[in-house]
Image (cartoon, rainbow, N blue to C red):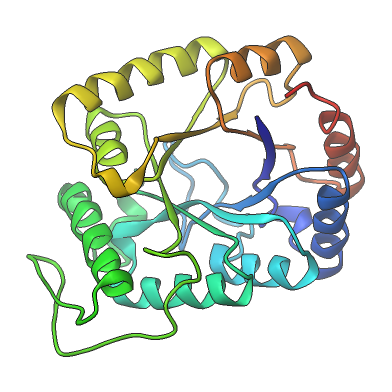
Length: 282
């Protein structure tokens, strides 16, 4: 089981010098991946479903990860997650390919349908069709990355007689991780993702999610090109992961266990958290 760190494109850790120090130290400590979240805007005033205050700073994940790529050598760079229906799929495909090339093939593109209606409305995307858009946008991006003569015809995206280079370093494009805990998200992960990325508060929460993924695997076909479904999981509450929980996650088949050093108010506390969690059994 690999360890990754998530959430450091926000609050006190977004300063460029702080980011460089923490990212290099995470690499030295043996972390395998660095993940950045996504919110274009947040409800103001804050609503009960919003994870952050509207004044909390959040760097764009792809921009942040490009910086992290430049100051590290081995860390995989994950979006955890990009809210896909808010993004133009061709523009995102170009951004993802560019980051993959600049980082030497280190991009892990985590995507999800989103959950904040106020945010979706602000960028002009109907909340009700976010799932269908997510499915279609994934197919459109894959077509642009993989086809000799890219073409796609859908309800939300259509193109032909165009091309986009450079292609991503990894054949078929960067690895796609689909986030979410709904039956639709589980089906999307099985049918369109190299992996699934989720959150919870304990190994028992993960057991329930794995059962949902198993049901989805009985309902939809999985293309052979995707291979085995990778499992990436982040414990949210408590944010401190103890050794027994780490062993349990590993036994459940987690490929990447992400740690989230909240409250992200003091870089020194974040560093101490990373150093402590680097000793977790894997």
